[in-house]
Image 1: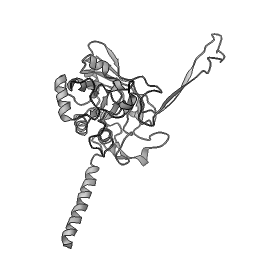
Image 2: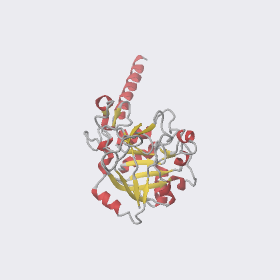
Image 3: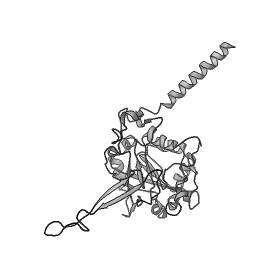
Image 4: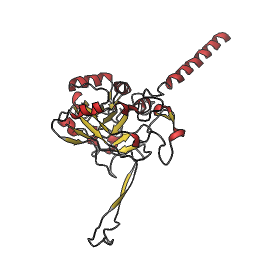
Length: 313
């Protein structure tokens, strides 16, 4: 009996060891052990040139929302702006030409409104993209590695999957996950194939709740599932975004987990996340592919970035 128990215990130990090994098989990155930009490596001059050829109408779409103190935000994120009237109001004009002006100070979480999640944003048990440990690069004054200032300018093909249209609804319900079956069917319906270097956006109609019912908007969302995230990462996409605050399906597919899609995209594959994208106008125009352009603020050591990318058709 003791020998049987010993074998059972040994088997359990081996199983745990194999599980631990499997848990760490996501690093080093396929882009190299020293890489810090992840899927941005899939951008190319050829991809940018090909995407530019998609511009036929010259119509430009702002994908960022207006951000302010009333913007819905993941707790405890807040926004406050102060305008300093250094030479206006009661201030003395400058020079013989009586020049006056204003400055502003922004006191806000960077992860608010339309935002880019960088590779230092969310990890797995204190490890982030490429296996970087938090103790080695996370500091109160800014990230020492994986800061969003390092993300190269993104000019590439954008693909919109209108999931509301595909699912024949005005607004996809919270918790509805998009996985391999849904993504491939939506691709076919749109007549597009997602490929290396693309930025993929999902339209769900969820953003319409932001100004109407903030509690419901932040209380859940439709979005990408774990299988779907793995599929897009395998296709070589640079970034995934949606008209939702977190891009992935909430409630989560597995109730005991928290933000597993963020882990798959950011930590395991270096794929950037674009939250609160205003996709309504693109969807209304039936757009499926376009030139996507983003030049994010280059704030040294930033984890995220408030952004306003543009789509051009």
